[in-house]
Length: 143
Image (cartoon, rainbow, N blue to C red; front, side):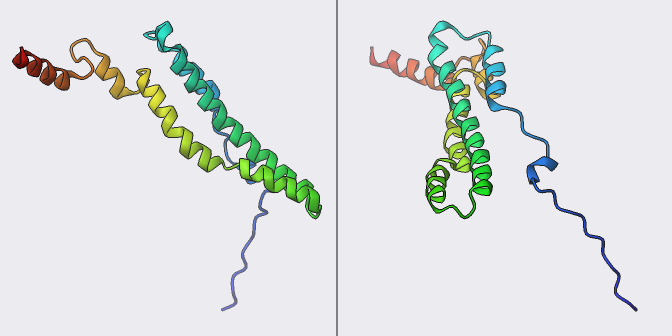
């Protein structure tokens, strides 16, 4: 029995071209904090921090794209390669997202931007519910 021939498909030059681009985190975080109608002027610093962290994450993605373009354009140029290596050190998207992602989540949680934080904000379930009860009871015994 003769071997069956396979048809090979061409691989796109840009693998990102075949998949949908993720939404811009800056826009998503801005929409999220703008929808938090419970925020007060005292929350402004945390709101700004959340927006700044989203900006840094997106900048890391942008730098990584620029790095890939430079790598293609400067192949074989030694002095350019040294500059490229310096830029590469700043383009660790995975590290940036890994570092800032959980911090951003914490900031949004502190602003009441997670389901658990919103549940804790309910009037019938104040933040620190059980712990506050224990502390109040302990304070009554000290008097």
